[in-house]
Length: 508
Picture 1 (cartoon, rainbow, N blue to C red):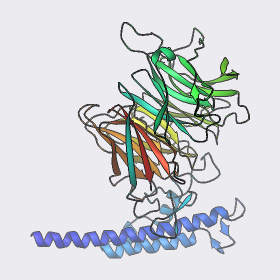
Picture 2: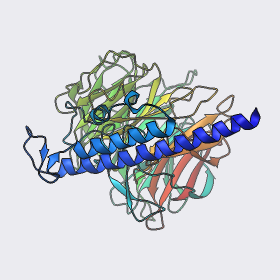
Picture 3: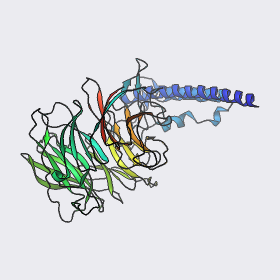
Picture 4: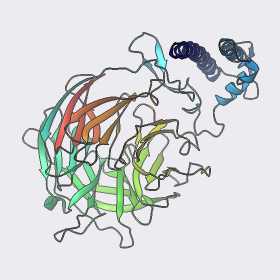
């Protein structure tokens, strides 16, 4: 009986492999035809292709029909019971309401950027709604070399990559629950400046963002202790000061400007780089409220080395019903993205405040949105991290109005405990890799320092386990990247529950 079952298993496995190969070939044909259709110049009312001399989908229909018939013959199934080729073609068509001139990520392979394959000189494309992203195998393994340095006395929050005026390379600004803001040089692997809670005028920093090359903005946090400064949810401005003796930028003592008395406490803040590219003394800042659930755009005016004016510029109309937990600005389309504790993600026009997304009526996943991040090489793709036990990462295409309810790609792993909303994943600067720190263990301190890496060009990246790396001895909270000392390489900067900051030379 065992041998019989084993033979049946091997037979069906071979049939499945052949079927998958035929469908893959059909998908490649589909991408070529779609690409030719997108580049040709023809009348919108005509479906005839002058290059092909026939209906633009005729060749694709024949290829798919052949693939479907082949699957039917191999499996002994009547091909009439399998999906019709025209229905497969229809499923590949772009949403006519898509917010872009090209078809969205989940509808077309051909509009994605191409990257050289590590195992071939051919180019491979990233995209596709059938799980066909391009690479048969992920680009593994990667090379790592990590150095850990003591940085915090209590649990860290995150490390942010910043580019300051006059600096020839990016610097890392790390902050934690011990009330410190620290300026680090990833190239030299050394601490440049440390500011304590007394200099900040806050118990600790809850969120930190860069608004201008010479200005950081922090959101203050509050401890439930008798000696607390009792000023949570306020904006703290950190202006760039004169460089030190070695020429590295420094930060001045914190500056606080009172907000209107009717303002709710601020939960999160995010800079809007690129919104005012020609103005070096004026920047825009996004803030999200705790109780009023409002998303606001503020105009910040600098005079010299101080912020002299903070003015409300735009109210963003959202459907959030709970605290705003994540914000992001997408400069190419001029969109504001916001996430909340209820799991909703909204996309709005920054200029008018008008909502872009459409509510399909589907139930929103009730998990906290921890972070929103735009792909560095494709501004249409947005990564959202969620505080949940599985499916922690969702990849959206903002050109689709319903994309927020229907993500193009879902990544993650099953975990015993809910992942924290303070976890900060990151895109690699090449736009191919996603890094997510998992907290694995019964508590935050017992978690090992694991970072999962997904290659989103890999066709089965959502199904297969990601590659993992352990840069810390305890749970990792954030991942960011900065230019390395070696040309063409990036330094991965991490902070973990071992109270260390890690600098990892990362090479694909």
